[in-house]
Amino acid sequence: MAQPLINLHNHSTWSDGHYSPEQLVRMGIVSGLTHLGISDHYYTAKLVAEGTYVDIDELEAYVADLGHIAEVYAGQIHVLAGIEVDWSPRAEGVLSALWPVIDQLDYVLFEYVESEQWAGYSLEDLLAVLPLIHIPVGLAHNNLSENFAPSRTPGELVSVLQEHQIFVELSTNPLTLYYRDTDPYSLRLWGSLVESQVRFSIGSDTHGLIDHVANVRDAHRFLEERGALDRLITAWWDPSQRVWSDRQR
Image (cartoon, rainbow, N blue to C red; front, side, top):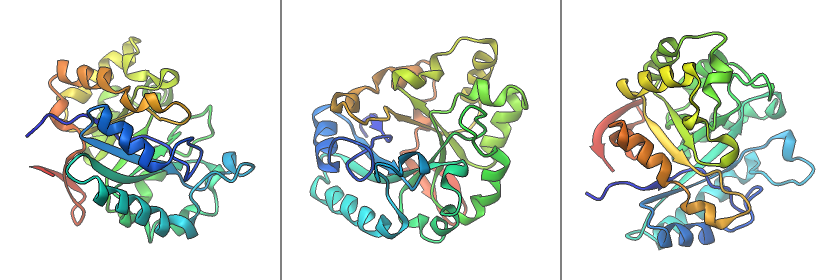
């Protein structure tokens, strides 16, 4: 089986991206990706003025559109349907409507978890809704050192992520390139992460520059150098148990 080359954080014209899902997929094929995920924004007040988000009444059409594209390009690339949730009061009032229908997606990214800067809800709040979600759940472009150092040791954080099957995204966007941080907390954290069973995703947070779709190789190298490339979330997921398996899809 070919080594996965994934980018599961891309925004399309369904939210605030500049390119259609099909344009992103075609760039993914040209870039040699094995898996490309579209993860447009679910409703968030930060995008209300532009109206550039997937609202609850658009979710079914969004999934159907991405499913059709996945069928068209099957055999060339795996296309996955994700969504990014603003885990903060900016999505207050619409989150509860998402849980009954969220399982039709392939995965969900939660941004701003525990972020004081972005008024993010806590990790404990996220754990409270996990029983309602049966697809893979991950932390998007999270500054783990800044957000969690005040409350948890690296080992404590890794233990929670592993116990609750929450994956960590390595964001290659220059503004959120946190996996390359060299502060003491980050170094200890990544030491603990690679020794754990925590899973990883990789994403460029593509919005306005389609070339960003290809910007994932450094993160793959980072994991490969640490012997953790086999823990990408392309591994099989058992939704009934919310656990990972070694079986590949």
